[in-house]
Image (cartoon, rainbow, N blue to C red):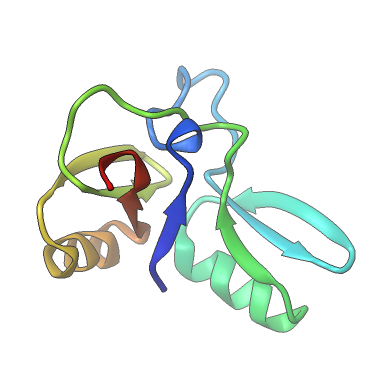
Length: 104
C-alpha cells in the first residue's frame, strides 16, 4: 500500500525517549498507535475493517532528501528516488514506503 502524507506530517522521528509507535490502526472504535511495523499494523487493521496509517503525531518533514521515504519502527530514511526501490527497502525494514508530497 502506498501512503501519501501532507508535507507537515512526514518522517523525522522525535528523540528515542519520546518516540511512540510509528503506525496506527484507525477504525470505527478510534485510533490505536501500538504498532512498530507495517505488517502487524495491516493485519490488525484488517481484523477490525480499519486502516493502517502513519502516526502523524510523531513525524515531521525532514530537510532535503529524495522523493520516497521508508518509515519503520527504527526511524525514517528518505534515500529513494523511485517507488520500487523504496518498496523493497520498506519490506526488509518491516515498514512502509511514503511519497513526499512537498516535492509535487
